[in-house]
Image 1: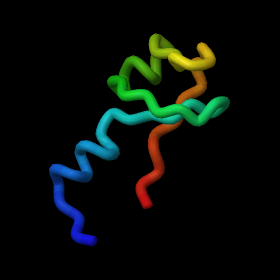
Image 2: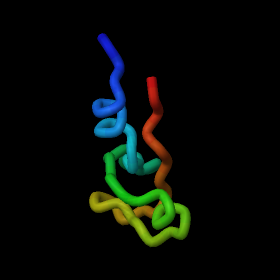
Image 3: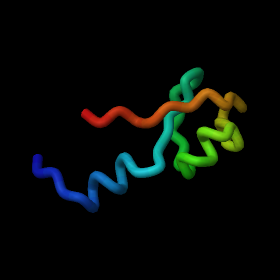
Length: 53
C-alpha cells in the first residue's frame, strides 16, 4: 500500500482518540491541549493523538 500526503492528512491530521471509550474525534490540537474539547460519547477530556502505524 502506497503512502501519500493527502491520505495521511485525512487519517491523522487533527484526529484524537478518547482514552476512556476509544472513540475518534477531529479537533484542533491547541483546543485539545487547553482542555476545551471533550468526548461526544462519554464526556471525558482525556484525549490522545491517533497512532500512526
